[in-house]
Image (tube, rainbow, N blue to C red):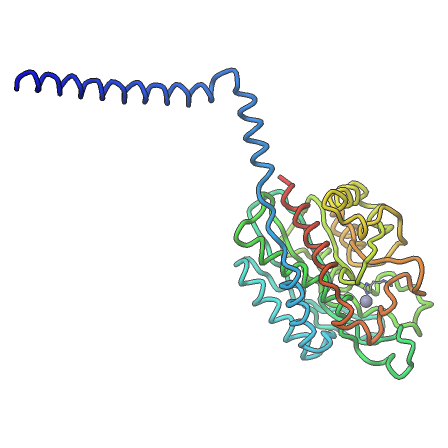
Length: 348
Ligand code: AHN
Ligand code: ZN
């Protein structure tokens, strides 16, 4: 009996000993990986892991739904009920994804003297982050289809499915997928109002440079945060065109060539070089021009431009009543959204 007690004590001691040495071994291993000669390798592999922070998955269907919802309000022409209702919907939709939504009301005089009551809508992610990226699009639609070949349509407002709603659809989808796993940097989505109230064909011969982009002009002089700065900005315009060709727009290359290079490179790596074409397009007086000029933020424009098959250089249905839902391609929204996510999630 005595023997068995001794034996069991010895056995217990041995068990304790094994545990003890096992514990020691674990501690030794753990500390050696912190302070040992592998230290650098350990850190860089940590960095590699960090840079592989998963990029959220963009849903083309969801982006498409956001486009459909905008079109359902009717043409989002400034000073109309559809415009106000859509603004309210944009605000409440963005508030589902971030508490930091600001609506910026403004008044602007259009080329024809009309005073427009506009609203820029701003949604911020990581509002405290110093390094920020600006993503923008216009959400209003043009009051006149002045490029329509049928004179009977030229005074009608347009749906602006591509010219407005597509870019906004992409950005709303970005907000949705960023919300549960925000990027390292801060992101501000700015939806501009009163972009497309520029002079009609009949008023073309005037000096009309500052008559487009009234919302972006206002925001660029009065950003939602005093002294607002961003590392860079990206504007989306007419991004839903089927088989879109995003040529490198002139002002983008002038003000922010390094951002054009960065974005087109990421697009190529992601397999979208059929859409993101490394070739120069013309200079477009668009919202990004004012953001560059007045807010001093290097901002590029991802915009469908074509050299053939359209008199405007834009897509053939530009500023016609046929810029409608049927012309929006989920595949194009997908490409743009996926590229933007890769751009945003690689910044730190
Ligand atoms: C000009 O045609 C001068 N600017 C075009 C800006 C625009 C209108 N983008 C979409 N619609
Ligand atoms: Zn337009």
